[in-house]
Image 1 (cartoon, rainbow, N blue to C red):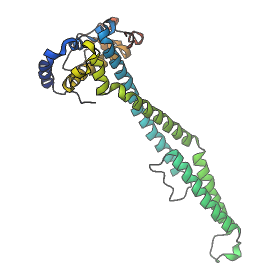
Image 2 (image 1 turned 60 degrees about the vertical axis):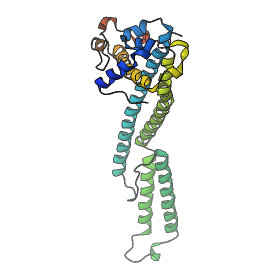
Image 3 (image 1 turned 135 degrees about the vertical axis):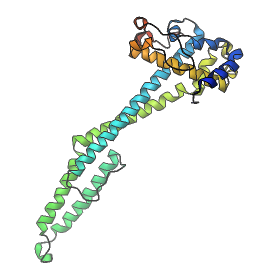
Image 4 (image 1 turned 90 degrees about the vertical axis):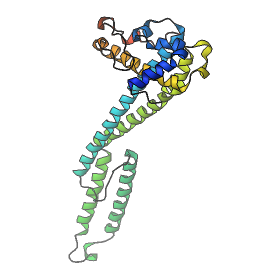
Length: 260
C-alpha cells in the first residue's frame, strides 16, 4: 500500500491539483455519518473498502497481540526448562514446538542407547573410581524423564496453542491484504465515477483517497467501539464535523456492503 501523505501542506497542494479531476470523489470528504446513511450506489464500493480496512486493522492488531502471547509462552517454557534437570546442550532458542519435540525425541533416543550400553556392563568392568553402573543408568533415566516432562507439560501445550493461534492470525491477515491494497482502493474509487473507468484513477488520486479514508476508517471505529469518541474529530488533513455521541452508529449500523 502506498504510504499516505504526512505533511498537511503537501496533502492540500495535491488536493488543489486534483480538484478538477475528482468529480464524484469529492464526496469522500463528507462527514463519515454521510457514508453510513447514503443511498448513493456510487459510494457503496468505498463504504465496502472502509469496512474491509477496519477488518484488516482489527486482524493486524490481533496478530500483534498473539505474537506477544507467543513470546510470553516461550519465555514460560524456557523458565520451566531452567528448573528441570536437562542435558547441558539442550537449547530451544528459535525452535518451533514441533522442532522441540523432535529434538527431545532424538535426545531420548541417544540417552536410551547409552543406557543399553551400560546395561551390558557391571561395576567390575569400570575403573575403580568410576560411578557405579546403576547410578549412571539412574542419572540417564532421570534426564529422559525430565525431557518427557517438558513435552508433556501444560506449559508446552500452551506454547503449541499460542503457535497455532498466531499461524491462524497470520493466515487471516494475509487473506485480507488484497482487500485493502492500492488495487482494491483503485477499484473502489472507479466505482464512484462514471462507467467504472479504472484507467481514470491515477496513483496520485489513490494516494489522496487513502489519506482521506484513513481518517474515515478511524472515525467509523471510534463511533462503533467508543461512542463518546464520536464527539472528537480525527486529526488529519481533512477534518470533519463531529457527530453527537447519542447519534453515533452501532456495530449493526455499519453494514458496509448494504448498498449494491
